[in-house]
Structure formats: structure tokens, C-alpha cells
Image (tube, rainbow, N blue to C red; front, side, top):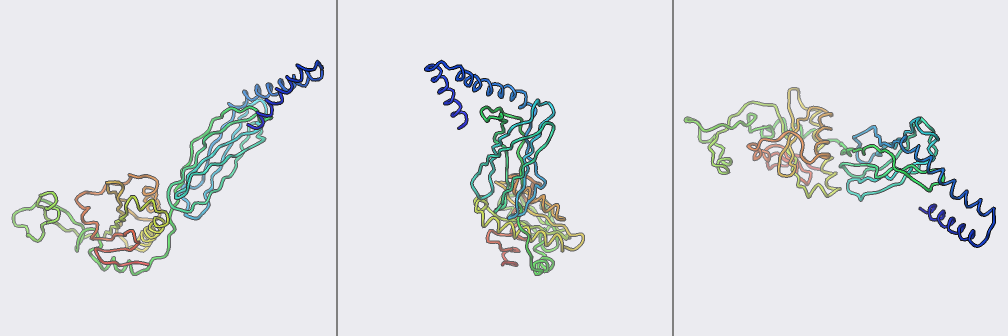
Length: 335
């Protein structure tokens, strides 16, 4: 913009001087000041269609505190008549727990039929989703007076994952020794069916009956399954420091159980998003990353959790917002 203003002032001064004085040299200089930029603009018309700018990244999962690395790739196809003099790229991103930022990249001197990549590094201090996109990309002539928009690719999304820390082996011993921590009560999973004559009154699920009026009884099946319910509110997710601490504890527990659980043991994570409950089976590190992705990148994703089993979530493992792990009403693990 500054160059354009100076150029317009130069033309205005040249025309004013030409009106006052009749010098051939002045006319020649004024003609050059008009013709040379016009030629640059004409050449620019043949260049902007042969250029494309895209954003690339090698990692979609980055641990909190590590450097987020993306690359701005500029590709100049062979269709251009001359090398590209310069490209300006306006970028913007929003890091979790921080205000949005913008940056202007100026890339100069790109040969025909070549690719140039410019690295961009960010530091993510909190867990969540990072969206990096290009707001605008434009090609400039060699004088920097004219610009035309060029093709630009889509933005990239990166998931900032928690930091996994050590967990005491006491938690695993508590889970194996406490039948209430498993899916269901005492002997295994809880299955509900309608009341039949001859069923014991002690097996009636009174809480569910008081809620919807249906008389149902509990059947038990032996199972080696564990369920972790992660209890947090939507307002708690906006507290960056507490949310990071909570996610660190949740991932550490799941990772510890996935690595140390006995064979033929099933484990799943349950969480609430909005008004719905979802679940995800955790078997290894990859499934743990999938759960983190679903939790941080999408508000409502995962397998729906049965509504009939929602009242039972507080009886098994549940991690509260204070990062204390409970089995029922008993705290079994805290810092």
C-alpha cells in the first residue's frame, strides 16, 4: 500500500511538472513511469493462474508443550512466462486457551516449475484443537504495485494431546479386587429384563422403576470388563489449566490400564457431550488416541451409551473434576 501511494504521488508530481515545463526528458521519464508498471501488470496476468499455495503438516497429534510444525508450500507450474516475483500469504490460527493470532509471510523469487516450502512453528500450551488456515494468498509484481489472488488450499487441524504420566500400581490392584468397579455389579455386567413371576423382589431395579414406572429385574453375567466414566461439565472445559490437568490424569489412567490389564479384559471410556453420553473401547495406544481425538476435536462423536445404564456410571470408576478417581463413593486414587 505504501508503494502504491508513493507511485501515485510520483505520477501526480510528474503531470504537474509537465504542465509547467515543456521538457522532452520529463515526458520520457513520465512515459517510463506509466509504461513499466503497466507491463508488470500484464505479465502478472499470465503468472497468477500458474501458482498455488497449500498448508501441510506431518503430525495431527502433538503433545502439549511441543512445537506445532506446519509448512506453507508454494508451487509454481511451468505455465508461467516468467519466475514469480513474490507471494504474500496471510495466515491465522487459534491456539487453545489463547487469543487468535495472524501472521504475514512474504515469499520472494520462485522459479518456474518449482516448489518452495516455508516452515511455520507454534507452541501449544493447552490441550485442544488447533485450526491453522490461510485467510488470503496473493501474487505481486516485481515492483510491488499490483497483486492478484492465487489458488489456496484448505487449512489443517491438529490435536494437542495430554501428557501421560506415571500411575500407581495400587489402582490396578483396587480394580481387580473390587467387583463394583467392573461393568455391572458384583458378578459382572448388568442386564435388565421385565419382571416375571417367581423373581426375587431384591432383584428389582427400584431406581429405574421410580424414574419411568417400569418394573425390571437385574440379571448378572460374569465379565472381566472395566468402565471409566469421565465426569466433567461444559464450563469446566473452558478452564484451560484445570482441563489440562484433568486430561493428563484421564489419559494416564487409561494408558496404564491398557498396558497392564490382564488378558481377555475389556475396558471402555464413557463421557458426556452436551446432553448425550458416548463410549469408546480402549484396547491399546491407538484406540486411546482415537478417544482423545473424539473428545477434543468433535463435540458429539463416538458410540452412543445406553440410557438404561446411565444411573450405574457412578457405581464404577469415575474421575471427577478434582482429578480424584472414585469407585462408587470411595476415593481410590489422588495426587
